[in-house]
Image (cartoon, rainbow, N blue to C red; front, side, top):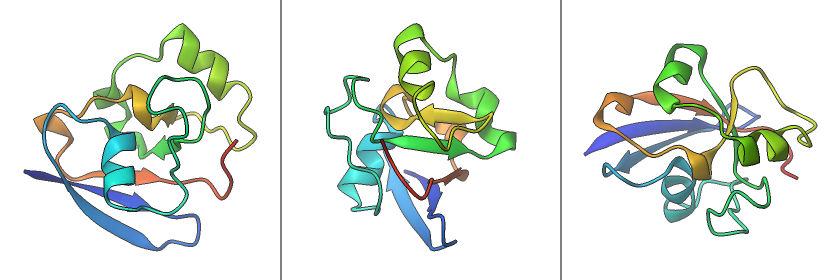
Length: 106
């Protein structure tokens, strides 16, 4: 198992463990990380799992698809490294990844 660190907008850290094959959204939901709702269950249809991946980890998250880009385009707190957690499948290479959470979700 590896670890992912979620950092809330007020700098509260949540260190979580993960198994390969899950998504960032599912890890956050399973660990009750505040601010990540995943209302659509991971279907890339709601934007309630918006996360801002730390710069040094962004390249490990894969490409942003068209549906994700469309959802992110409506996110008021979008950053250059914004992603929807439901679209990031966890790999071993993500052990230690830091993810920042916006103050508000869509």
